[in-house]
Image (cartoon, rainbow, N blue to C red):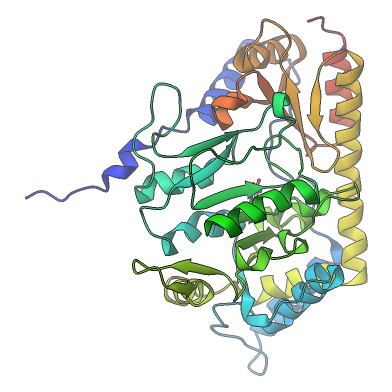
Length: 411
Ligand SMILES: *Cc1c(COP(=O)(O)O)cnc(C)c1O
């Protein structure tokens, strides 16, 4: 018998979107070598690490080279010097109590949001907002929870929760029962948020239906408005039904450095076949201690420096810089009559494509006429059709130049 493949992988649709964007941009650049293309599709930070972080990072690297201070394997869950800072600054400051063994430091929210499904049964019904960060969908495809993709671009067994201008980007509760619900707010790609009341509706749903919310708060630090929850645990009862994912990638520029964490409260329960409640925290602990050997010591030292007063000041300046870009994008596009969403509590601006243009049509137009690159919304799911994502991760000069060029177009 020949070796067998995991056939679930064959159900994945090739992520042709970014390959297709690159192909189109490269072809355009070849045909127009003098064009200065401005890339506004980037989902990656552009500003360097804060000096406060670099200082600790360097020092920790030096410690690794000395007999007395060398560090080998650390705790798989993360060093307590970092976990203490996380709890105190990100949670206790908002009235949320967590104990050290509820926080798991990792090398990324991408891995954690991707890996978390492993500890849940394969027969759970999974719900995702649409459009969506593809990691949630594709890791469930690989695990075998979704079935094949239909002609409508939806995996058969996944429940899609449309988030469009029609419902103000607020997902409605599902009509059929679901078990695992991925929510990301502030949202990538739409840049929109939920109020505390709107998120509380989901917590209530999860409590009533014995479901679990997987809450991705990677963009928490971009929240500028009052009344927007920074953590799902600001909502009463959420600890019993929610796991929260955070990352140092977007707030402190750790996309290339890699550090994040996941909160799994001890009150959180899932059920075995006999209907008995089982705590989830020991399962995630078991999963991590078996498959993961911790984040490197210098990087955890660097991450802890994010919470120093200098670190906070520096990351605040970078976030302000990106949000200034976001405001420029929003205002410029509104001024020329486009409908725009997001960009107030997140670095993403979600643009409704002009009448008669779909996501790719708008992409082609901006590339050819303004030499500006964004991301077609349809790449994030069927409900993203007719939308376009522009990011604030750029220099202010490029952002202004791109908006001037787009403002000269007529739609
Ligand atoms: C960027 C991003 C993350 C962060 O991922 P890391 O692996 O920590 O860099 C998580 N979730 C979403 C939705 C993101 O856009």
